[in-house]
Image (cartoon, rainbow, N blue to C red):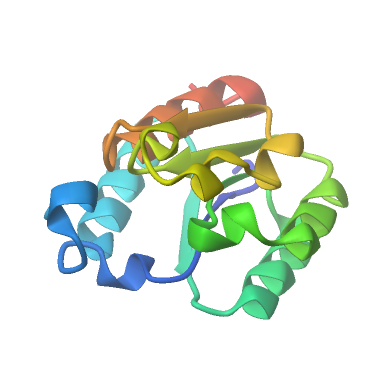
Length: 147
């Protein structure tokens, strides 16, 4: 079995489906995790899906991924725009990194237009709702040799 793909989610994504549904939709994070699990299986991938509101926990998972994962799909939430520490951790990871945002961050407040994570990511998917995670998994399968 190939190494798993880590799907990491940052702050407030645990409130998906409840917080600003007009921006983020009505699907919950559990719905997204289930959809990712199904698609990962179809693609010959294993997905490890995680969420934390704490920057250090996300960094620890990225460090863990160095020895465990074939790639990282990350929705860093608001840490996208603020965390050099997450960028540094991602720069220490050798596999592909894909950045996902549920909303189109470029149609929102100007401070959301800058992403530290984009400096490391092979690709960025934004504005496709939770389907962005599935698009990222499909791309990750291509990058890591899944189906």
